Length: 281
Image (cartoon, rainbow, N blue to C red; front, side):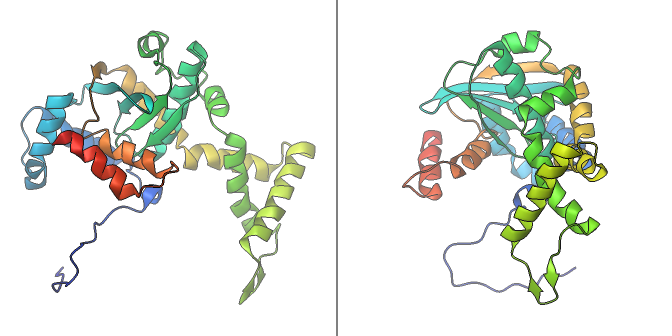
């Protein structure tokens, strides 16, 4: 348990990070994170790591609010990009991916709009060019479990998710030839073959067991439908705290940075992040 290091001559250090969505928060780790955040909100933190982050938490409390375990924080603010709406369930990236699309679909049924979505392990963002009818959506049971599977099917491109899952299933089932050892087939050839099989089965044999397995895995493993359902039940019991902010908060900042990665710009990501940080000085 000893790490041996040596001083580097480089001026820029590397920042360790998780591998995107490959290592999202589990349900147990999410629950522990919410417990620690509750301790911070009550000024009961004991861990030195948490106390070190106290200035960041104080800034979050100053600009918005520090949610307790019995609260759900929702932040609203407007920028040149449009109207931002941030939810902080602290349930993990996979759950937030499905929850963001689900909420966008349910809100869009109240008022037609196009939403841009970004998420991380702590929360997610809905961005549109018009004011979002949040209060009306909350009064219309935004967190309900009713018709959950139907709403997921409408809010997400479940067909494309199942198609991606079918590639691995077809490989394991021996439906496609991946090549000889040392001479594997190119990925685009495999994708074309499995996509053709998926379309044929979907049109002529919709009850095919492999196709059903692909849809099942898309819901259970890609979106973690069971965890999403449990998360909605938990949200129904929480007190909703809505804050209108003048600028991005520490909780919102990393989500907005992820959003910036998907935009076309002549500026580097570092330059755009530097501009955002100027608002805190």
